[in-house]
Length: 222
Image (tube, rainbow, N blue to C red):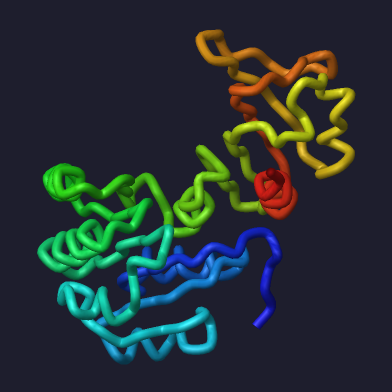
């Protein structure tokens, strides 16, 4: 299958329903190696050949988490939509496995509170966060991602090394990547709209707009 060169982290996705499936496919498209775990055999079969690997198994069982070697994954997404209990059990198993960054879908505020209390690092509310959006946020390259219907998006991210210490005119991010830096937020300072003379400093946050594929390339820069 075609593979992007933007990212290459291993990501474990548990539950391949509407949310988890969308996240898994977008993560795969971005270049991640994705292992999908789905208890429903029919649903699991739909993703064969679309993800790096698909395992039909029940992730609420701790032994399954051991079998798929979850401890080796830096990122995991719990997208289980059928049961709050199953979601919590699967998430708890990932916490016990010591995965550094766990994202989990919450059905309600109460569900979110439980996930937070057991140690899930990032709680996702489907009414606000789509699977595609979460896929862009999982590895921490982007701090926020808002996509529009025409393939245009606005993101928030830390500046790439090539921009730090230079003005926007000097770093030429627009000509290199085809994106527009809309604004810059420095620690302890108010948001300011960007102009060519705006100097980017270590610790700044950039607000950048452009085509999704162009923004992805910028975000992949060190």
